[in-house]
Image 1 (cartoon, rainbow, N blue to C red):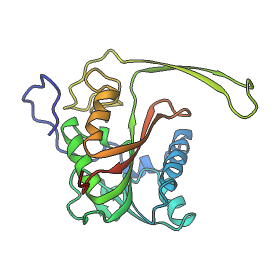
Image 2: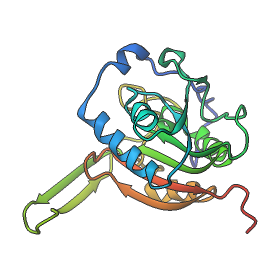
Image 3: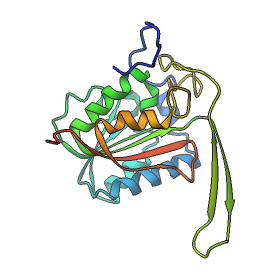
Image 4: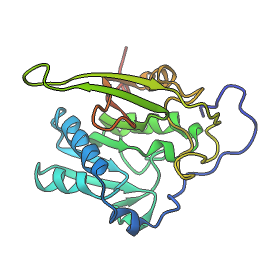
Length: 230
């Protein structure tokens, strides 16, 4: 398990459902739900998958569009049975699935809901069961952006400054986002370079970008290294 430098011997929590009722969460739509769903579907379809594992059912936008608009064979997994997934379980243990059973797995804003020591374990599982992965993570701190509109015909010019959060976290207990997140990108010890380094052990990073329409999200598009002979 991946521990923070200088971490104490405090035992991390076992992966568990969010404290909020699944039905309440699933029926609370917001603009960011649609923005996030758009990017997931766009990134997913770049790989042209036929079978996808969706981890974290959420409000269900991605499932509906991928299944009924793009005719993808999509299977759902969620740790909370209240979301009525096809499989109840945690992404850190995908032993029920065969090696490379899926063309692609989507894990959007899920991994931060577990103690950080489960992060690399989850990546290993994801890389084993799928050829490609879409992993989105929250990016903490303040993101100040200037948008200059109309300077070119078809696009705007954007300038963004990311101010890291000052709060110290250890990734062992949920202290962020209403005590739902154990860690987020940008916090001391959870910098982008470190997270990329851990991801790179198990995946080739095809694309990594800060969502221009939802600055709280940093998105990775990945190809598994599991089974590589190099």
